[in-house]
Amino acid sequence: MKVAINAWFADQPATGSGQYTVRLLDALRAHAPDSEFIAVTPQTNSFAWRVLGGNLHKVWFEQAEFPRLARRLGADIVHVPYWGSPMWCGCPVVVTIHDLIPLLLPEYRGGARVRVYMRLVSASARRAAVVLTDSEASRRDILEHLRLPEDRVRTVYLAADESYCPQPSDAVEAARQRLNLPPCYVLYFGGFDVRKNLSAVMDAFAIAARSASDVSLVIAGRLPECDTPFAPDPRRLAEQAGVSEQTVFVGWVDETDKPALYSGAEAVLFPSRYEGFGLPPLEAMACGTPVIVSRAASLPEIVGDGGLLYDPDDARGMGDGLTALLTDASMRAALAEKALAQARRFSWARTAEQTLEAYQYAMGR
Image (cartoon, rainbow, N blue to C red; front, side, top):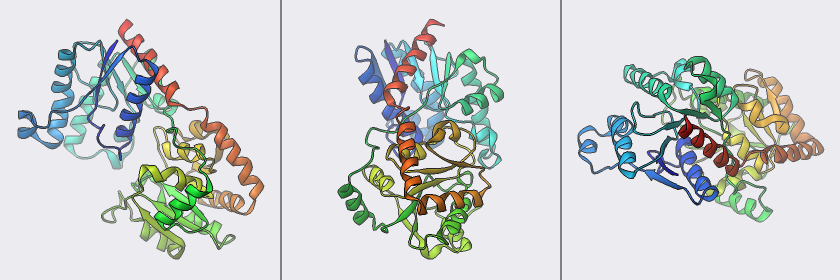
């Protein structure tokens, strides 16, 4: 079997689609060495690139260049690992729709161009042989809003990379020195747009800090360039919650430092209002770190009993749960064991196996 995979995001590891593309390719090649998986990348020196550039060239690549290159390669099937499949292609199409955020959340709908693009990719998804998605929550959204037959939409869970595991104390200490981390900290890692609910992070930490005054809040990731309703500046939110002096911003974190960053944390807060999957909590659990997440969208099915779940508006409950974790070592150890057990349910080998089954089904249709 020869599979052509749209690799538009493969060189963008900071994006979820980029990580998914690279890790899926690696897993597929390891799981099915007799098949051929070809990463098809845009030709940045092409006439279309020079004339169109930017977003228009992306649409051109998705709808014209990628299908043409797939046909030239003699692909048996094509896979677009993000919501951007072609309307017409000479072989079966599989598309992964991670979530329906641009359709379901008003803040993410964008302007007229974005809305036109969403209509295009929604129509092309309806023509695909199979739609893959990351969770049962996203599958329900897709069935309801795109109105696809149930047999054409499959849940294939993602996984944390194998590097995410409990780190030895020397690795944690080395990362602590590199990132200038405090000795005892609660971690937030997961973006700063409005659905991430950073105000709940600050309010929950403020409650816990009253009982555990020696703990700090570490905020990791590249901060917003400006303070807007769509991307509120967490520094302002920390000041409003009265925890600015206990909050440490470490900025962008290299992928190699993330397992130690998670492993060194007492707990991870992740009160997002909507996630198609929720990779940061799973990475934290794979490192044996307890997580406190919102009971929203996909997070309950990903976290299971490996973390504490609360309504996204229940900052008081999150704060009380965090207080209990910080002050009760036996509770923290028990939840860490549950977190490790839950994380072991997900693997890229299983993701590859189920994706291959979807390819076979698509070719059979």
